Image 1: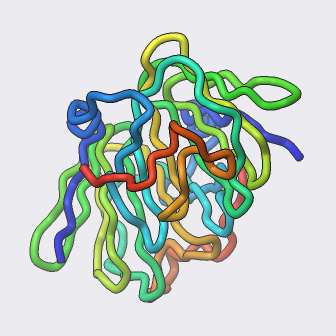
Image 2: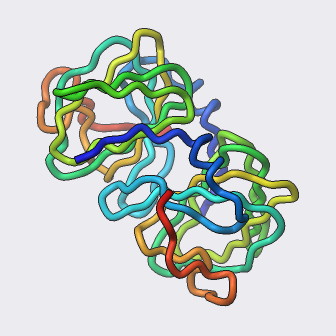
Length: 121
Length: 121
């Protein structure tokens, strides 16, 4: 059994592509994932799970159908299951997510931006 | 339904007591908790769950029976279920934890430092 210290800065340095989440840790059947994002994602929801977003660097906007959430570094939110949302960032933003293993980035929307197999880094 | 932005700095400012974890968010049946810690905790393990520790501020040492983990801000680790560990910090340290709702801070060890009812802030 290996218990490793995971350094977020070092893990983000391994990511080159935006909107390409990577798994950095596993907690029971949950994954901690990180991603670099910029621009607008697709509207989607997850019918089976809530989803945590924590901003590590940059500025994240999560559009909801009736308003938007503005998150600075050190801020987080939980998007409840079934709630449509669209993450966006004007400049590159580094985020940490917590969600059940197997949760797809595009949720129930699918489409060409879906990452079918999220890799570990 | 309320979806709130949670600011870690603001939440930590509400905590006065050390070793007194507070819940700041819920993800399905998991809680995100924060705590201020200083000194040494008790040796314990959680037979039913893994546990995530992320250092937000300060310097955390997690003693294992055969070695110790040193975590700086922006570093995290997962203590697997059943693994004995003892968190410690020379100076006050601010940590974020992720674990199933109802997980006790002292795990299977119990004792006077157990927080039976973890409050929301």
